[in-house]
Length: 275
Image (cartoon, rainbow, N blue to C red; front, side, top):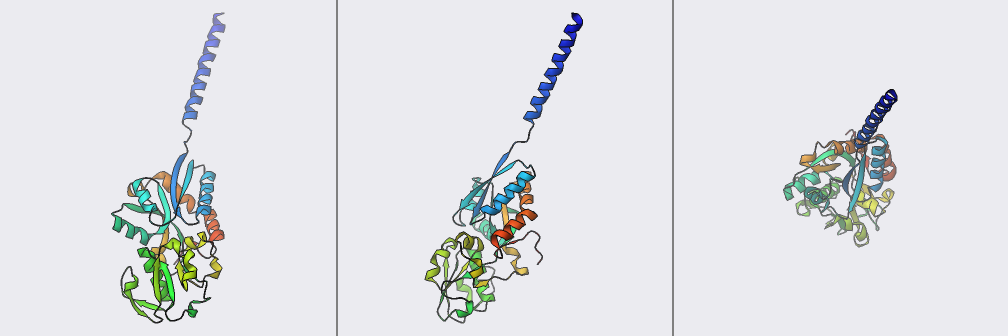
């Protein structure tokens, strides 16, 4: 009887140890972390591909995508801690926003390069522009300057030598074009009111404009590097391991293929782009 009692006692201790071990293992299982990402325009398809990549890598990260209707809110939301990251802007835009708002945001990874394009409901080529015609452009400082540089490259205006040109910096204007700055989100809706409009890629895709019908597209050169789009975080989070995993998942061949399929020639993966 004593021997049997001892065997049962040892078995009970062993079972208890096993159960304790199981409990410890369960509590140590990785916890899924929610990360909110602010976007502007039709980028949801790409971020679904990023989520798929994270799931494939067992990263235990759940992306919460928050859509904004304009360029004014996403940086303020990251700065305030309302969202964790955003992905809608190029480096030049971020630098200008930080300067204007005493911000503390940084880039943690490249995403795409999205050339500006010119759309019109009235003409089929920029060469069809006539004297006194109206061309609308985005009114935020960086994209306004970029749109003006596009018109300069196309040969319609020349600009004073300044980092961020405005319509006031137009030096010559051979057709006396009326350059009309508007909120970027309004540009597609006001196409019927102008002769041509310089529109950001994401805004154009969101408005279901056919990129094949753009009458002119910004050329990609070495000068395009400040226009590479980025993922942005607060400065204190620049080395956050979770956020680095998101950048790594974005910068994969699988996501690059989704970008190419979704945006055709309007956006190109930029993290390995050779200028």
